[in-house]
Amino acid sequence: MTSVFKWAEVKAQADDPPLNMELEPGQWALWLEPNPFKLSLYWDLARGFGEPAQGRIFWFNAPKPLILSARQECEFRRQFGSVDRNDRLIMGLNLVNNLALYYEYHLGYEKLAAESEAWLWLEKFDLQDFAELMGDQVPAHKLPIASLALALVKTPALFFLDRPRALFEADFALAWSTLLELKQSQGLPLVIFDQQPGPWLAEIEANELLIWPKPHGPELNNFDPILKPSLSKTSIAISESP
Amino acid sequence: MSSPSKRKTFARAPQSLFGYLGRVAFNWPQRLALRHWDQIAFAGRLLLSGLWGNRRLKSRRQLSRRLFLQETWLLFQTTGALMILIGLLAGFFWDAIWFGVLDNIGGAERLISLVFSIHLQEITPILASAVITMGHGVPMTVSLAMRKCQGDFATMINLGVPVEHYLAWPRLLGGVVGLPILYLLMSISFLLGLYLGARLFFGLSPWDFMNLANASLVDFKFLKLGAKCLLVGFCLNFFCLYRSWQVKKGQLRAIPRCARWAMAETFLYSIISVILVTVLYD
Image (cartoon, rainbow over all chains, first blue to last red; front, side, top):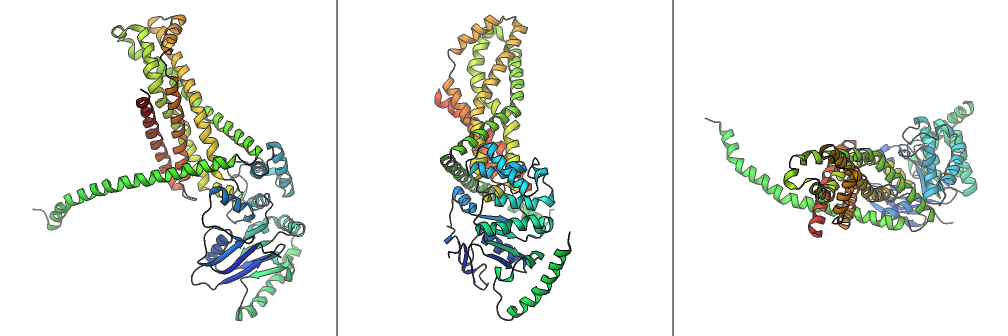
């Protein structure tokens, strides 16, 4: 099976230990890094912003060329979706047109057809009431789910989530069910970057989730006991919540 | 008697002054060259994205056309009324200014020929450029710079939409095509203002005015004026776009500086291009 995302002997900074990771279609991974600055660095590297100090990162078996034109950069970014915790919508367009832009620009839809496709996404994510709001007027609690919709519109072959606490707290059921559905139907690979495992971890079977960077030495023994109590607590919290 | 430190300062004054002048003399051309190099690179990026953008999908052409019409209409909305008003006032005051000296220069006939040879060909393009820069160019720079600051461009790139193609080209083309039409609008309102003044001051009939205007129109250099309008339109939009692209994400404080630079460069280059066309054509 071909890998969709691979780190080969990558050192984010010169004094880091080298990292080797590989993700295949349909696999989900959790990237745990307690240091927020380092996590942001990994997050940027994973999305092709910046070069690691050593090693190479491969997206769909190809590294990102050092020099890209604006067009090539856009083509590169079209392949994968990402939801940053600071993501915003396009403020010059309303929410429908934010979603319709991809259909219009890349798939060749007419304006009305593109807007009707966008409405399907809005209905799916229960965002109909905010359809006419401009990108910067969408309320903060709906912004993460709207960003998720915008990232999924381009049917990505690889997906990244950065510290999805806000997304999962506000619209957990919607976001999670959509991602699971995409995993089952299209084998969407997903990498979640976080400082600590969130409550959503209880929803995944243990053998279905890779955990990066692989713990080594004494940390390996400490990892599970730390994780398990939090899992049991969060699963209770989820089952009790309305 | 002054203290030793003051004497030392005065002794260093020529050195400081000449040092400063030297730094300016050596740095200024270098900075100017670098800035122009950056502008050429931006123009190249625009050109490449424009060439690529329309090639692949027919619908993308439709989208571009829609955006272009939207931008042209916005240009008319923001500056149309001001252009008409300034045209009317300028025409009326042209009469008022020349009223006293008309006897020496040959009456209304001479006045209208002067209008066609000097005002409409040399002054109106600069006047139009000033109005459009302030009414449309600088607000456009600020709004685009604000969008870039707020992460709009990054969102578009994430979505796979090249910002140069989606945001810059429609504005550039809208400006280049819209300016000659706005110039025409300004000229017509100027002639209307001129006629109103001529009727008020000399009692000129509409028929006589049209005859005089028609006679002056024979020497009217449409090609020269067209070249001026195109160049002014290009300068206006290009420098405003270039400056809005210079802002980095989160740099809200840089926006006023960008707007100032956009205004200064647009004025400078549009006046230079108007003068150049006049010199080369004549």
